[in-house]
Image (tube, rainbow, N blue to C red; front, side, top):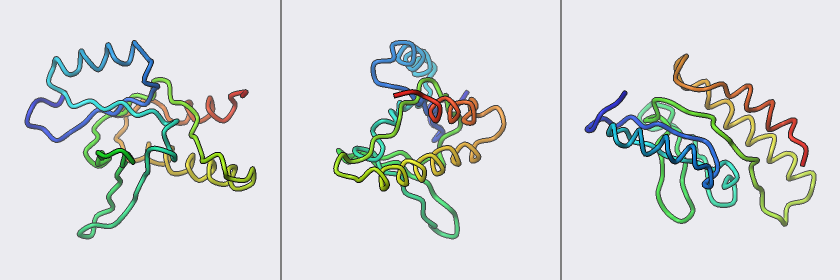
Length: 135
């Protein structure tokens, strides 16, 4: 467990109304861990993902359109609790939306490879659940 003074962060992928996730967040914060809740339904309408080279290193960052960001290189663990479907702008055509959702899946689920074994719950199981969800 990372302690105060550490730059490592625990990322929880769930929905804002997830009471269990909030209880876990409180417990982790009581242990002085940095914890961030991310609702994947906010991507791409309210959250953006950037990938860029900085000083010869690949950096990944999430940015909220309302302000604030999270450097994913500082994330030490991910809990794929109850990730929601990505949301795309309503004015996109069906074909463009399908393409954008495919790209979002590839980008986000590929990020699971950044974390060491045991540092993340299984994104492949989560991907299967999201892909096979009936809307």
